[in-house]
Image 1 (tube, rainbow, N blue to C red):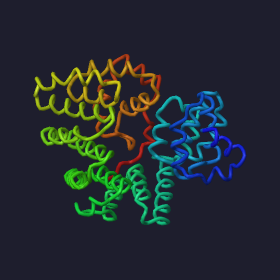
Image 2: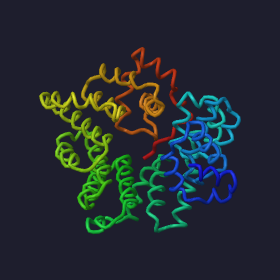
Image 3: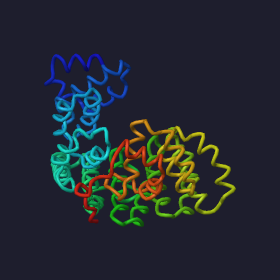
Image 4: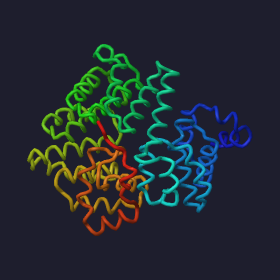
Length: 365
């Protein structure tokens, strides 16, 4: 932390060329006071650190500056943000209201300028480094964020396909395959997506991260109503090393599946653990309760977590009246059934708004 501050102060040109991952790791491990951490982020954002990866950093710095009542300074950082999913979120979250007009003009109708810019940058970066799996994963994400799901799914052709090939891939390549699988599902190719995830998860050797891809496959099955198919995969995933967050994701998927299969005794036996660990993953827990037909309990959990900025973002997105590109399709269509409840409506109106129709990305494929 302090070493990074010295470089930022005395050698900004050197700072611009620092390894991005090293800087992101430094930011995650800070121990200084909040204002020191905040100033560091503002300084990095104002120099455009991270290039095409600067969206999240810039958004964080903008948030800090708005809290400090410096909207003009915050506005100057909007030029570093073109990720449509981040733009879409900011245009819904009321804390960014002082910048809505400028950001909407910059993004264009249907976020067209943001979508084109993010895809153009990702395509160029992959052209410059055609064998870099991280750049390929970024292009899949850029196409998905632009609503171009079929184009994202088509990138499967550039990735290993057989179990033999997938057994040898590194983590970055695995994430590229994972992102393609999610895009295929969004493009309406749910069976092909499931087969891809099955091959990937069956081929990967034991490691500390494959559980994420196992969970992603299970989520697609559960959200597609294939509860019986999901349960044995949950059994397998629970044996993997994982965080408390991941454990709660699996608990809620099992609870949702058991409830929907009308296996009431098993669901009832699991419920105390689901509620005890709600704090480990509040958003997925709310979703699991709604899936299981418990809107009153879901409302209580939402209202207990409103005020946490990360939760608030998910809450505003999930309450939208139509699905958006930043949507986790699992959530939309469930949470917004609560919109008519007075306490939920009041929280939504305080924290966000419906994305204006003129700004919605057309979801063509």
